[in-house]
View 1 (cartoon, rainbow, N blue to C red):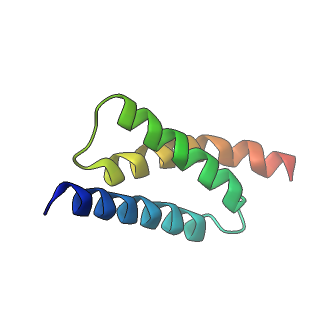
View 2: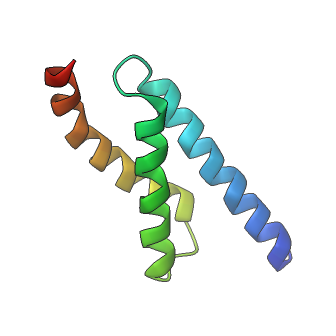
Length: 77
C-alpha cells in the first residue's frame, strides 16, 4: 500500500468511526455533537504523531468524551 492509499484507508476508517458513533448515540446525542467530538480527537492524535491505529484511538477518545457529555445532555433535554 502506498502513501496515498494509506491516507485514503485511514480517512475511510475515521469516517466509519463517526458513522458508527452517530448511529449508536442516535436519540441520545445529536449527530453534530458526535462529529464535533470525533474531529478534535482525531486532530489531537494526529498532532501527537499517532498514525498507526488512528481510527481505533480516535474511537476510544471520542467515546470517552461523549460518555462525559451524555449525563449533561439528558439533564438539559
